[in-house]
Image 1 (cartoon, rainbow, N blue to C red):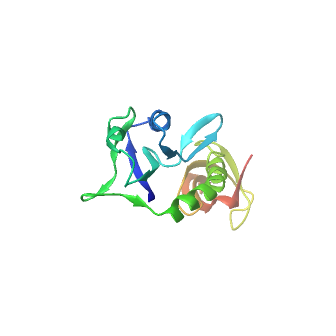
Image 2 (cartoon, rainbow, N blue to C red):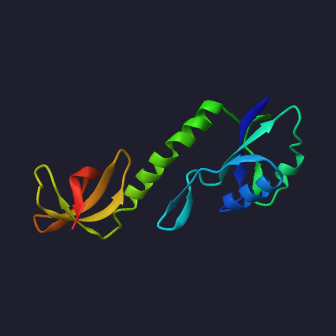
Image 3 (cartoon, rainbow, N blue to C red):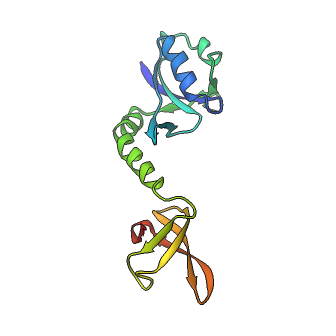
Length: 157
């Protein structure tokens, strides 16, 4: 019976490992996005490989160029449920779109606040935070103050 397993790759060698495993006729899933003409892995240093534990020889996988090892939990190889891999495949495009949005502001960009008490004020982008929030610098009372806002509350100017 075929199952999906998780493989740890050597740093920045996901594509090399994918190519070499594919050349050996293994079914490999390498979730990635192309943003600004640059391929970016969705899971740094990890690949999914579909294997039949009854009939396939797993021995060459660990010595494949780019592969570090199988991910394990104790003595057991880390199985990834089919539903999870299918979900990642179907959600991959939405993830790419979110990653492209994340790349829309860079440190030092000038923004304008669109809502709330600071509406119309100019701020300087600092970084992204979790939960769709951004940190910006806003000049208040003659000093730069760091504030956190929802990303949708600011636009580039």
